[in-house]
Amino acid sequence: MDIDEPEIHENSDEDMAVGPSSNKKDDKEHNFWKNNSNEIKANPERFGIEESSMELLRVFYNRFFPYKTYCYWLNYNNIEMNKSFQNREFNFVKPGNEEVYIRYLSFDTIEEFKNEVLRVCPKKIDIGAVFTAKPKEKKSLKLSALKPVEKELVFDIDMDDYDEFRTCCSGATICEKCWQLIAVAIKILSAALREDFGFKHLLWVYSGRRGVHCWVCDERARKLNDDERKSIASYLGVIKGGAQQTKKVHLYKNSIHPSINRAHKIIEKYFEQVILEDQEVLKDKQEWTKVLDCIPDDNVRHRLNDNWSDNPSKHSIEKWDNLLEELNSSAKTTKNQKKADSLQICKIEIMLQYLYPRLDEAVSTKMNHLLKSPFCVHPITGRVCVPIILEECENFNPMTVPTISSLYNEINDYDRRNVKNDRERNLHDYEKTSLRPYIKYFEKFIQNVLKETLAKNRALNQTSMEF
Ligand SMILES: [Zn+2]
Image 1 (cartoon, rainbow, N blue to C red):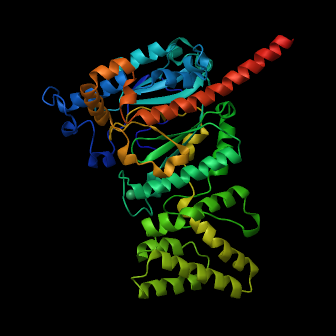
Image 2 (cartoon, rainbow, N blue to C red):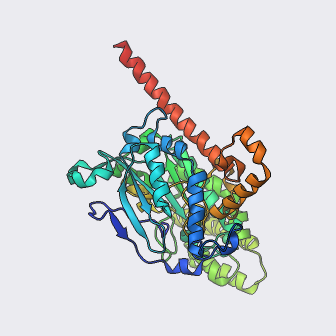
Image 3 (tube, protein in one colour):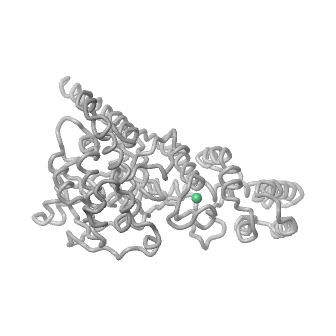
């Protein structure tokens, strides 16, 4: 879970709460709110440093946030606002260094939502469940009258969970190499959600720093209860145990689930490049020991360890070939069938251990869990939480995602260059900037979701007219 994600807050009487003070990891990073003065071109002396970040955020909410499409999404209808939107809980985190949450917010119209966003200028927006009543009326309602009834099925994949073997970066940093760990996870999870559960509408969103969220928007997914969410999360949770657990995947040769076989096929395409080449997980003893610990045979482990210790210049790819040869020959020579099976399956277990999605199950299992909203701005990096085009997730580069500062500069540059044209063409502000492809993709995604609701409503009307 992202460190800045609040826990669920069922039965809390506090509508406003101060969260934990800033995480130590954050302190080491470039903090967008404290230190971005050199990223501002216009009037740097006019604002204090923190005020300038606030000003940029205000510009973002004023000129770029896609209010209409966003609200239609959560309304699952673009005709009139209904309970899906009006009974939806939002959580705003107030601007400033402290984490002050404004909880149980809800809005009746797009305008009301927009006005409140512009008034508060939240440094983060979280989306919660749809309730049986309006969350903003919580104080006048009996607790039992406010029950969560609907929420997208959500998944959270965070780079933190790959840190035990990630060698290119550590902590909050991320690069194109380690992004591929996330990209493979996106591919595997999307295939499982589509093929095993029949879900169609998967919105993948960059969390603004080193993770991604998946919002499954199908009606069937939104109506899942907590037990059903738990079952799905557990079905998809193949990696078991934290950093202390050496072997995290356990398979049985004659009963490998088709979902695991499919994941393995996807992983086979990327393992050499991402794990052996980019992360070099067999480079030195400290790293290769983690791999060898997954092998269920002392002799194989020792032989490989000796071989690699004697040949320090061997590349990870060559070492992986040694490992495969050892597993094969040992499986062939042993008379113990069970042992032979476990040696043969070991290769797949290791590959899954490194590239199968590492899910934060707690995020997926409760309908009433708040999750950071798409298109809000990451409070540390200033990057916009943009959607990721599933088919192009390998090429997504988190380092080039627009920030509120880059957008501010882009729009000013555009306005300076195109005063006349602008009026003629009447473009939206986002269309003049690098935010364009992300919002266009979001609009197309939402159109597809809404089309389905429309078709369903039409069918319902048809049926009711027949009676
Ligand atoms: Zn990296």
